[in-house]
Image (cartoon, rainbow, N blue to C red; front, side, top):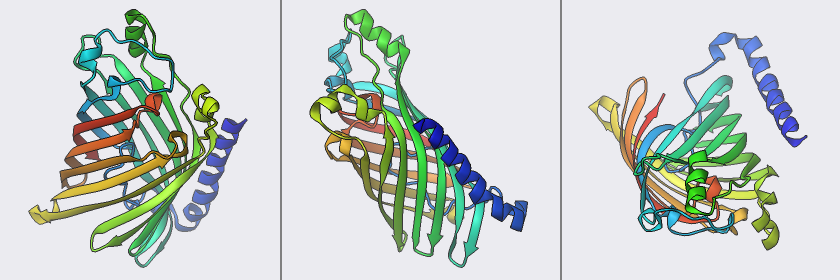
Amino acid sequence: MRRQAFRLIMMAVLVLAAGSPLQAQGWERVLPGENRFRPPVADPLEPRFSVSLLKTDLLSRRGPERPPFLLPDQKDSDSDVVAAVALGVTFPIASLKEWPGGGLVLTGHAGVHSRFRIEYPSRDEMSEDWVVGGGLAAAWDELSGRLRIHHRSSHMGDERMLVTRMAGREAQRIEFGGEAIEATGAYTWEGLRIYGGGSWIFHSNTANETILRVWGRDAWWTVQLGADREWFPLAGGRLGFNGGIDWQAAQRTNWRGALAVAAGITAKNAAMLGFTVRYFTGPSTVGEFFLTREQYLALELTGRF
């Protein structure tokens, strides 16, 4: 019933928000070029197109999300090099209102983040983390913000479960995800943007996991703070740099913070292509390992369209 209600809410938002400006202004307001809220540079799970090599210690310990599992090569897995692939986008659907210094747009977003253990012949997929949703983004000169509703879910790769089964103790998939309303606000000062916000997870599959029930812990709220900047001083404004820092915490992890840092170089024309170095430490962003502490360093090639 909650999932059906979520779908109905999303349909109502799209129809009611888009209907009036399209009738009044015509098709010129459909698919505008301005998103009004730039995706955070350092957020590890922001939808984007990217491929990266990632050195992680995720498998060096067993988190309490599920019963312990075995690996055939535990010592080698303590420091693992994996390929991480992200396919996603945040896009403006319709311009709802414009004013000097900004405007209001209807947006959609969808993405998946996957990891593959490329050091091994099986190339087993560790996990997939999905997000899909939509909302509103607005800007007023130095101020900007977004309000989104979305669904998240996480899935363990079949090969990962098979490899651990062959080792003698299978890694069981857990139910991670749910539906949330997220609000984020930002202020930009001389090119530096500072942002903050959080989300209310009104339907949480994670809250029903055994370990959270045993601990008496809820999974309804998250918070996020960060700062980032993009600037293009070279090649007539087509070549530049970006960087950012992002901190997040969630009720499900007892508010243990996760810190992410990113810096890179970007070329832009009609589209953007960048090379980014990322560092992360904290409870893993991989939903299937949400209570396992992880530290990684990633070299990433990123595209934005």
